[in-house]
Image (cartoon, rainbow, N blue to C red; front, top):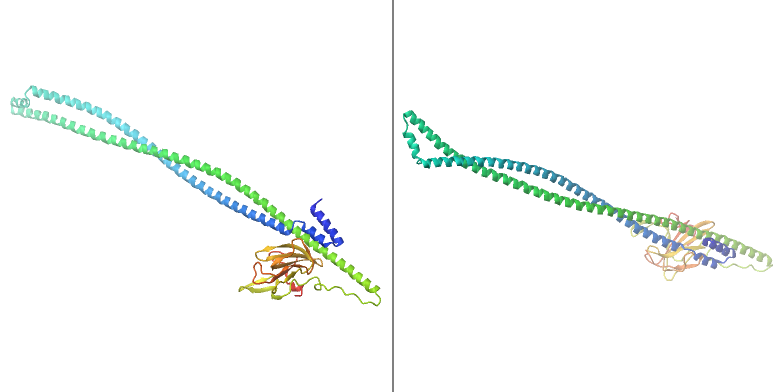
Length: 440
């Protein structure tokens, strides 16, 4: 059998026979609003923690994306450098080929020049040999002296000068050609050395760039793998957050159901109280009519007349409405009652305790739901030194629920009392002036 259904049957039976202590025990056996709110608080805290982790994952994902963009930009830059380097290598290779061809051509020219030099050397050697055999320079004198006429002499002088100048020119050309050959060979070899060195440097740069590109590509793959992991973790956290949100909504529904249950208990209790009051009144009327000449009995004096009673006795220090606290204007949603000593706090009407706990603002505080003429009310008793009731407990008007105190956000011993027409909420939208119902 459903537990709540069983409890409802138990409550109905308790109301029927008027067994209020049994009713209170049964009600407190259920999951209390306080427990549910505690669970809701735990779920909310867990959800906040999970949402914080989700934000952290989002931040990590964004950082990872930025790193990927940065690595991709670096890879692009390296690729551009590689392309430029490869172009330069091709250009250098072309220059090396051209220079090598030039060197080969030069070698061919050198070979031809060497042949000419060799031929010139042979010619000079032959001429030198002829001079030695015929007496050296004296032969030229014999040639001149053997002239038969002045014209023949001039012709012989010209011929001798031509031969001497030709020999001198041959020797000069040989020296100049040799010097030019050596110079050109040195320049070309130096150029080739420079080109080969530049090409070697470019090849080394290309190898280094390829290595950098490979490392960046590997890092990019790692970042992609990390990104995939982060997305999975983020999705898991979002799923967990969604589940926690559903738990929050479920607990909120259970809290509202529990509050509604207590309000219904208060309503049924009011009906039962009225039924009992009518039955007692009928009995008194019957007793009065059957007693001839006797004095009528006087009922016991109630805590106060009507459905409500003052929760405490003392001085009203702050009424419901606008006032000033610490120099700032604020709206006060209750009535403050102050007194010295050990001052008892009473339930303002019949009802059930919705919640009894400690709050950083209200201190020791009790929330009670009431049903007055079919209307649900909620009363709040704050800043008590201690509470004597627990969640789910049934209370009668005037029952002591605690003692006046100075707990929570308070400035001296007093009771902060609130009256809400309907349920209590954080915005205090249902708060009304207690003086509309209670004579303090």
